[in-house]
Image (cartoon, rainbow, N blue to C red):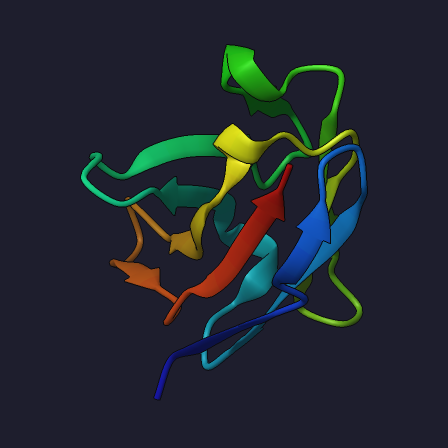
Length: 117
């Protein structure tokens, strides 16, 4: 049974920081590309950051220089450090594990991040 469990969301003032965590179970974490997506009300889900199995990272332009994705294979965990948060970062943040071509992709249940002005 594959599970991705996110935590760390909450309410923060603009300019503040949060760190999201996603603990994976039921998968071979070391071969998974891991990513964080977000979906704001009335908008499509968008890729925020990805870290590939080899450690290469990429970010959507709007978060470059503010967000940092990392992974800890010993803990089967991927993190998203979010600094200098803006009101437009408000969204539900989802963790994704991509095991292609060896397997499927899996989503977490999401964690709410709300940034107040």
